[in-house]
Length: 143
Image (tube, rainbow, N blue to C red):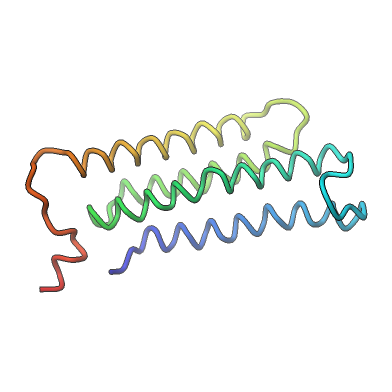
């Protein structure tokens, strides 16, 4: 069962997670701060951006995988994956500012939109047009 969208998105998110972590580590090293934020406002914001990523992305990746398994790859899912990656990059950069930014707000809103869209899609697939339960596209090929 190959899930090209989910695999691509998971790889992109792993790299984004590392990028967010490295941004924190660079400040930690320069400020000799091993634990917490050490009173550094930028480090606190970057830690929060990293934490926010780990709060929202795992559930969204699970939804991507389940929807792709149930419905197959589609341009809509590819588009949603691209939106999620752009949203998380924007949010990461947006969190550096002291005041609200388009990157932060837009990143959060786009992440929520993708997650809600996938949740609705998952419910539609699970309880949609028919009560008959068809085999997922990946399983139908195994005959």
